[in-house]
Length: 295
Image 1 (cartoon, rainbow, N blue to C red):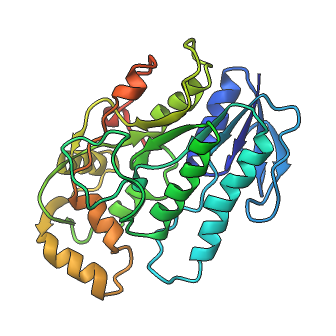
Image 2: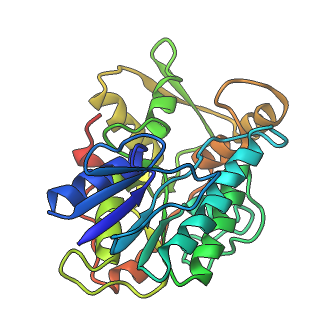
């Protein structure tokens, strides 16, 4: 089988490309730079359709993931990559099976629920352009009959975003977090990779029907326990302190502290637990978790 992976130089795409190659698949990496394995076909999501000639399956991982403040000039580029780029991929796929890697950031943070199913609202309420553009992109993918995966807070070896940014906030043996301890879902990159391959029918179970699927580790974590574990793995002796959530939200709106935005405060203060029933019914079970995390 020949599989095309967009965004194969990124965190998630690179893991997928390596795993697919290890399974014996013929991997083609589509992006501006060569991927870690397989063949390279140059592609810029903002200018042209990718060339999927000779490809059987497509996984669309390419995305612009920056947490941009409202009105940032790079928002147009983020839309061009995430929305227009997805439109280009779907057009070029021309009926091939497509797995579109979306994000739990598409869920409206104003609507609360103890556990979020795939029916949770996604049309409005996003805290940054990333959430808005990913929601718009997955609407295109769902309309085209793709499988859409919604991971939350993907972590793992080579993670350039989530955990490194948190660890960088350790100061003088202290990691200050906004709000109280909460339960939340996280997604090991290996679980996301396994879900991509399972959705295409490459792991011994049938391909998944088109639609949206939450993807996360088997059980939610306590936020503080998860971060203590990460601190230990990185050999960073630090204790966790709690800042009042309202104060953190005010600072995120009114100051320019690097890394402090309404989105990051929401990520750390709002309990988001994903319901995995829909993926479970397809025979998928997450096999990886934070206990096995290594940088």
